[in-house]
Length: 325
Image (tube, rainbow, N blue to C red; front, side):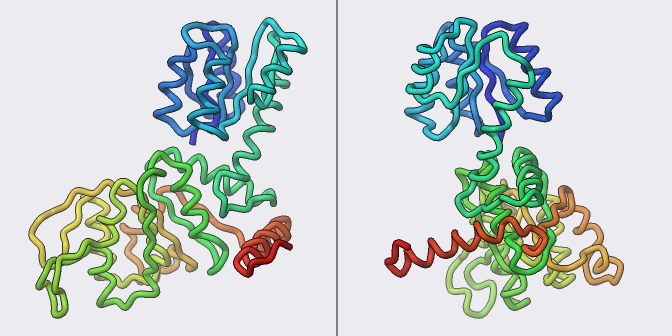
């Protein structure tokens, strides 16, 4: 996800604001009018919009109306050199979250942006709870890697929420319209895991009465989560490595290579470097997976998340039981 869509027709001011965003490590894309901004917001997943009011074609209020209609929930901050209290009230009533009068201090703009971006970190995924500083830091890193196609390796104890983080990365990425497919490598017997991953053709083995696609093909255009990758045997690791390198898969019993467009996230609760040293995990596969490593802290390391998680679970189970409190 991109932090800010900057919309400003004054090239010098746009460049100055862009420089400020870069200095404060806020990702952004630029447009010089409302019409360009509409095109960009259709093509990109942005956390918020910072827009001038007086510009053409497509002024700030028209852009705000478009966003409220087609991208409801995306916060918009308007900025203008012709500020007044009635205009500010009108902007807020129209749906803007804030209104800045030029010229403004850099610190004022940064503070306003950060106030809006922090909730977007906390609320980007309905299943994601991040109140503790450790969780917020992890979430910010997850948002950054979501903007790339890098393979992610999540490490952490069982039950810490590695799959939740994986879903968060998927939902925050440009692949969020595609499928999110997960497979637990520890839960499937070794002799079945290969066919589950790669699929098989009719007659490939006893019981293969029809052709079936595997998890890789199911995840086309989206994300594949390889949960507990450390439990995969060495023979299958070699086959997985080839699929990742070639970005192609061949079903069991098949002769056709199928091109893949899949982003891979892997998780483990073990020390993979130690497993590599002990010859239990392939070193080349480890480096293919460990492009962007993230460690998910345990709940005891992020105590500020405990009460929000408890409240979330209480709400879910009460709803399931037909309770309201």
